[in-house]
Amino acid sequence: MNLVFMLEEPSAKAMLEGLMPRILPDHCNVQYIVFEGKQDLLKRLHIKLRGWLAPNTCFVVLFDKDNQDCVDLKVQAAQICTTSGKPNALVRIVCHELESWYLGDLKSVETALQVPGLSNKQKSQYQTPDNILDPKGELKRLTKDAYQQVNGSRKIGKILSPTNNLSTSFSFFISGIQKLVSEECFN
Image 1 (tube, rainbow, N blue to C red):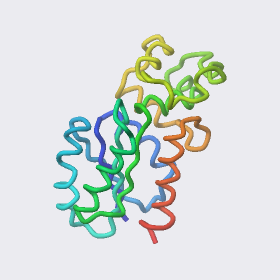
Image 2: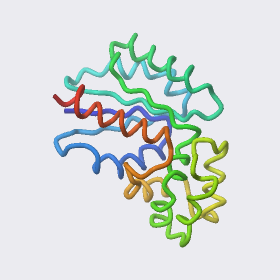
Image 3: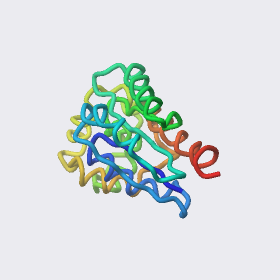
Image 4: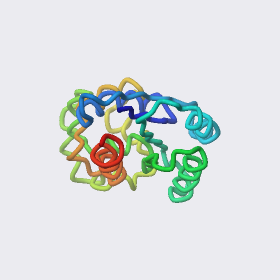
């Protein structure tokens, strides 16, 4: 079986390469298609989906919310998937940026980036990481610049907990992947 991720940035790929092997069954073939940002992904998504001919393939499209309305973005992406012949593609939105997911699991960030005491801060404003408007800036500040986008994502992805994360958008992402694996994609 094939699972293809359509991603807007290299850091998402770096994180998923560490996370997905711990979630997906061994017989799953995973591919990552990285675009040059959200607009490029939106513009070229239909071409990639229409051109994909391998059977038994499921698709996951992942966007950062950034400053957009997440409902509008999800509807727009779902429409592209449907008109491209892939109506069952899973579309997920990271609220606000990928770093929100990391702020939802400061214990993993502490371990991955070797920043002692970071997990103790989980009890403060990091209880609802999806509400932080500049998660990338916040994570850099919190780690005293130990976090670098791609390399940090690679390190964090290897240990990011799929079950102990306070980010609601991360939980929806994980449950969506689990549903694909159990119901739609691999049976």
